Image (tube, rainbow, N blue to C red; front, side, top):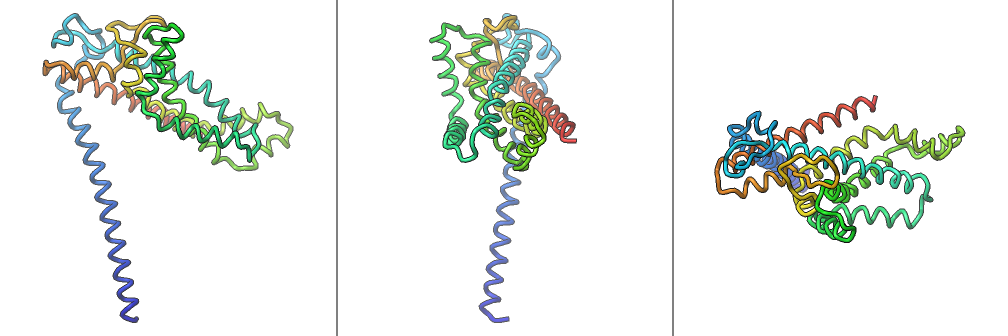
Length: 286
């Protein structure tokens, strides 16, 4: 072996080792940050976490360290998430099916819609909150559960649409033609394909859920805040992110620790939703 080839092999080996160390270091750094965040939440939140935090509404002196819990924020977050998911699915699925199976393959309009998805995907959540607030003012809607649902739906809709669109691209290209050749209508074809896409859709819903339930900027001016559980769409609703925000702003250390306890509750809710999505995804993939 010539000295030049030996030198080249040595350089390639050094390059390979460098990138291996870089990848391992990046993985360790990310895991370290994750463990630090989770550890901080557990360290400060577990002592303040109690059954009262989960089962009671805030009392009169809750933000001064007295009795009460965040049941209003837990229920409000669940209401807000379920409503926004239902609205987003109602609009996202028909649109994705339309651009993939009803428009021509080389349609310019299809490219424009997908480019719009990419733009909306990167818009900050505070912009959606401001737009939702302006829309509510125009329609005469007060800060309420309905306003929060609309704002969060606008936030997660691009995530769902873009994820659904990518899942549809993974289907065999001749599947729609095969279904049509068997005599199925386009509506029946869409229904069969939709059932086949359920595992991928579960992942898309999971991504949207994680962003929707943990966002505070979108609901700050649209959903409002209340110490009670909303009984109608026209009433304001509390959410866990806003509850955490208000508790952290308190000068009382006990209230700040309750904010970390609320963060644990929010993490558990997201974890349960993630496990549910994975369960249904594996079930329908079979």
